[in-house]
Amino acid sequence: MSVSVLGAGAFGTALAISLADNGPVRLWARSRAHLDAMSLARENRLRLPGVPLSAQIEVTSDPVVAAEHRIVLLAVPMQKLRSVLTDLSRHLEGRTLVACCKGMELATGLGPVAVISECLPSAQPALLTGPSFAADIARGLPTALTLACTDESAGRSLQQCLSTSNLRLYRTTDTIGAELGGALKNVMAIACGAVIGAGLGDSARAALMTRGYAEMQRMAVALGARAETMAGLSGFGDLALTCTSDLSRNYQLGLAIGRGQPFDPSVTVEGAATARAVHSKARDMKLDMPITACVAGLVDETLTLTQAMSALMARPLKEE
Image 1 (cartoon, one colour):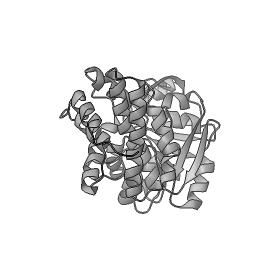
Image 2 (image 1 turned 180 degrees about the vertical axis):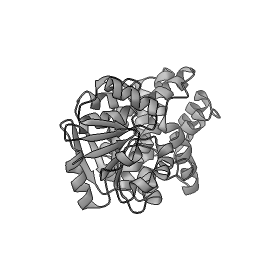
Image 3 (image 1 turned 120 degrees about the vertical axis):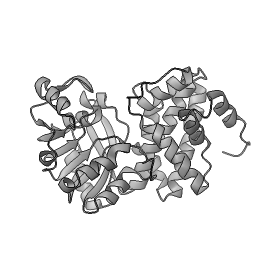
Image 4 (image 1 turned 45 degrees about the horizontal axis):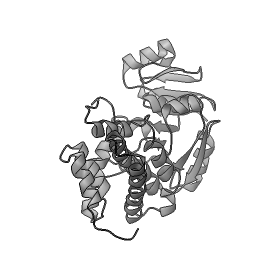
């Protein structure tokens, strides 16, 4: 079955490259200049250099052409998802829309599946998430991902359609848990990057990952997710990847914070906005999420790393 990918960043391009093994793929770029460059070079030199686009991939900047396929993957940043859905709403009505972004909308506290449902009630929303770097996927390296869809029948069909030779998809109907796993692990990756950047050691990172995972479960269960979802690819799997790899932009931001270095503001880091949104939501829900609070303070520069570390280490002693 043919699919479309909206968003020609590194991840959208990587997904298009992998999915092209199954059949024709349309890759949509908003920028005409970006489209022309990809068409000429048959490569996304701006976002994913060194990996050729197969002949099965048609690049376009025309939303009508891109949305002709029934299955549309939305590989756009979380904070831009609503505007893309709004701008292209008349072309996307009734489609199966698979969000490929991770985070929580700053203005509303909603995840990607909820944003799709709110913007396009006629669409079938789903979410593709889990441990995955664009460079790995584009090079054909194997990974396993979570496909979340509340409609079990639609989820089974998507699982068959979107699985490739290097992408093994596991299915769940717990969209809330899958959304939160992908969103919250980015916050913890910033924290872990800050720990390593400041030279606090691997032991401190391991402790922070573990307590961060406890925070992820705490919020997820409070919002109606299943605890076992957080133990899967969309939660623990993605947490392990992003908290330990220099390829993670969230981890890179944390490293810069820990080292006291500037960070390129043009680089999209989903965890920064998500930390603010989750911290606000946790306060409203009266949930204890101290690591998230510290990360929100660090990205907003209202808290120093020394203050954050002191706040966490001085918390009351308790049972695990």
